[in-house]
Length: 242
Image (cartoon, rainbow, N blue to C red; front, side, top):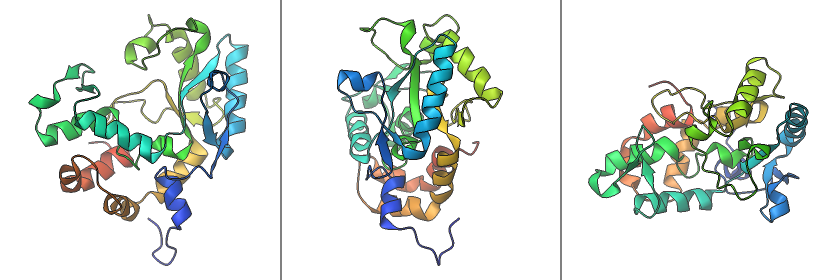
């Protein structure tokens, strides 16, 4: 927890909640060649490039599917899912019918796969969704689902290599924040996080900041979010076990 005598600055709050890009730099990546801007935290850029070099030496092309995602984009995803305009999935990854769910059930279903706007690790620029571009054709439609990273999937060997590198402490500071199912966020073998930056932001993102976030705007299911705020903060922001 922060010392109350040292309040969080407006700029740092904006960094934590995806409302500024001041902490980010452009990353020269495969995606940038196709017109999409890939942004990463300035402190994570060189470690990522070193990790990409290691992947290349091992026969993989480490590519970024998703890096920084701003608050507005995350809020749009939430609005689409709450309105039934974007798929919502169950614990098993199978599609659900939002019309058949209560507001509380819909809240947990969305949180399983999509972070609350302002509380996504992708806001920090420290977290990336990655894949092996060398394993698929250029027109491959990436889905970021567990089947793609299973042993028989196109990224199975890449996942095994990356997991081993992380376990051996040789992944340039990157790790899997969602490696295990703790009963909240679904496991994501494609999601890596640069620990030095992510740990700093996660420590700053205390309960006071979370309440400030909830008070700063409104989004679908806000009543259920407020009702379960403590549980959401503990399990989905701080990643504590259920």
